[in-house]
Length: 521
Image (cartoon, rainbow, N blue to C red; front, side, top):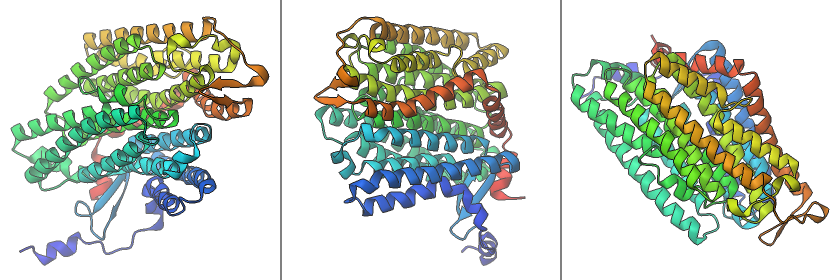
């Protein structure tokens, strides 16, 4: 029988301050609006304005939380009338606050693009509701302070993303959805099994409490096996080698706006989970896991680059470039120094923005050319110089070339690897970068400079029986232009993001403030 004195000590006796709820606002606001969007699903014209308002408010809440963390350090909110580790905790530090801010911004940009890409049938089927629920799952994953609730938010993301993936019901979508669902469910199954076994050993699933319990546990061999199970589960979610097949098989099948939100958010949640698990739960004493991180990361970078060169379809090429970027992030985790983790955070922000922009731009190019086949796209520079400039600039960014945002995190990553004598990881990064340059360079030559049959009377572009007018093109190019300018600004003035990435790396390696904010004392 549980001692009533212990239970009384574990219960909350003071009301939660209104200001403390700021931690979950980036998740709670889109959840409320998603419910409203579902109830008003018959009102087609209301769906987009409601989604825009929801994400704007979420972005405001994320910015407010980011500033609070910047000045006050990690913060925590425990719900359900119990203190941590018994209650449901949400904890934010510099890493999670930054990711939540960028995730909300990316979602807003995709919603700005959506009217030109999403038809009424998709709206009636719940497109905007599913996007909001996907943001709920992503932000919930970044903010949760409990490993079981991380699993819950992963399930929210999986259900929402699967719904977005099959909107339209085309054969190619269903084929991609089956592969996507099977491998992600496999990862989720390993995640759940490992979580249950971890609870059996430690008696807790709260991140902050696990930090102390795992450190004091004598079941070192079992914990080492569990760490590898978590690595396998989240490597699937992140699309790391050799568990990457679902990504290039699925990301080119849905609408471009859906592909963009997947590219910008989903794989980064898997990487975030790896960072959180292997800095809070298994912070040290399992060097084998970090060595495996390095091996998988290096192979992911190289295989992603080779796959990108081999593709003849634009969106499939982008999927392999996205996968190669995941490898860079895993290399940063494997090196596990302050410089490497700062580069990892900075590269994650860069990838969230640039890969979103490239997928959105692929939709514009596909509509202009009437095809996503690279060989069939030609003379874009003759149709619209702004589209050509945007693709060329974002291609430089994803390759890690100046003057865009990809340069500095790759430079920092190479420097961190050199300082740690990880020369083969340096070789993997450089080979992957060369392969990326070759892939996007070939695509640029074929799509921009190679001549094509161009006939664009009155600024109209013919594609699949649709007319892409100049006004609609401006709508599609606006979020791409914002991403282009952000990447350029972060390339020529990187100090601000580097400073935030250093702060995030400090919070990752110095876990005491995170634990104190959750458990107190």
